[in-house]
Image 1: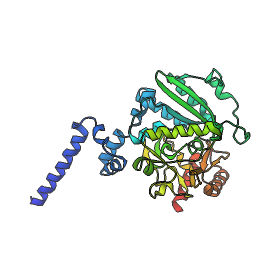
Image 2: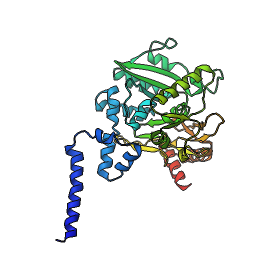
Image 3: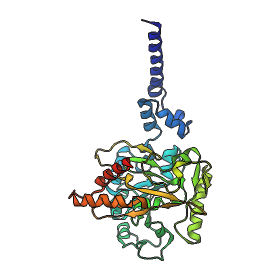
Image 4: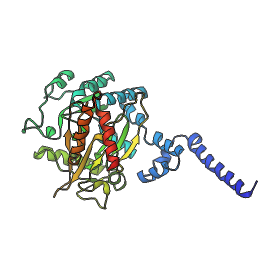
Length: 365
């Protein structure tokens, strides 16, 4: 055997031994991975399939994130099946913790749900041992509360600030020291998320994937673009300022303009969930192979003298199970695609077929 062949075998054995150390002998991998920032962790995970799997299962472990709220991993899977059924999204601080690999003590779990599917989400929380804690203005029985005919933001101009952000109701639940807020959308959860106070909290976890919409600015520059307030009045302003201050205290800089050119933040560029700017992490597959429909949501950033604004409109169409947000620029081919699907006689709901058509159209643009 030649010297070069011996060197190749020795080198290969050394690499194998390193992998063996990582996977079998080292024990918990968090101490190693916790010293890597987002860019380093991504590069490390792209080294090979084995390390990609290690990073995905160790650094981005959804059951570990949610088990303090729901208990055993089987309950976490049951929660994800509820997400699939109802279109419920995780967002806010917990979703940011998932990507940033941090744990903030006392953080609530914020869930965003479509109005028509709020009841199954509530039933899951109650079955998991959560107690409904009504506010003074709410009915004492939770199912009576969600049955109240909501005020629609398009029908009444004199609405509280929450309605301006697309919120019908906010339900508080607790189990021991754990708290969950169920935010019920007037039209679609993504409409609410697009009206958050800044970009650092625009991270979403569906039943199938986790999405960080502005990963470069959020996890590398640690900057958050300040966004225009959707509500009005001092209460809305102070609430958004308090929200921003919370993330300033956690290490983010609030900026009106990014410190460097970042394509993900360019004005008037159509973005959608799962595009090449999004940091997308696939989650362990569920037994039911239902596609994630989040890619149907699109938007743009519009410039404003004081702060930027997310520009999008709600897309609602007969034959769809859920509503979505879309950039104005996407209007023509969303409606065109739905007309073709409706005329084809395809069985409803048509959400999955629309997602397939829209994804195909984007690949040709």
